[in-house]
Length: 218
Ligand SMILES: [Ca+2]
Ligand SMILES: [Ca+2]
Image (cartoon, rainbow, N blue to C red; front, top):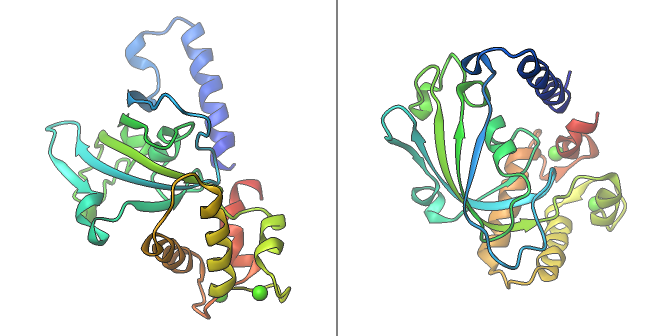
């Protein structure tokens, strides 16, 4: 069962159990979202498959210690990732839905939506850790994930996406956005897309590799 179905079942059961009048502490864990700042002009919000650009700091709930800060990585550039497809932990995929550029959130993520019973030693996350993230979202860009988009990007029609083709596509996408974007942003996105999707490293994204963006629909 894919994740969204599990989530639906989860919320269904949660409603069911609550209806049975069980004690509050027995209800399953959930992701808690607190909106710290929402811009007045918020016409476009994030949804599954969008390409997001954000900074976030991560803290352990038990003692407030910081285990992650995106500002100290990648020369301080905000991180790019596709929302809702498992590129980040489940809790962040949930917590960053319906968010607009400029919005800030504080979210509390229980272990079952983060690193679970095992924890994540490399990331200094102990077992069963509840995590707190402070997120600032900068940009929401339509993520390349549909077959129509694939065909649109593949301008020479060889069923392979080259860096040039994707670069051209990103440039057009960014131009649709209100804010001008410098070249280094675009290059960072491009590098990230190839790092995460060009699994055989041939410098092209094949339809199969591109399907990463669609795995929720398979
Ligand atoms: Ca091509
Ligand atoms: Ca490839």
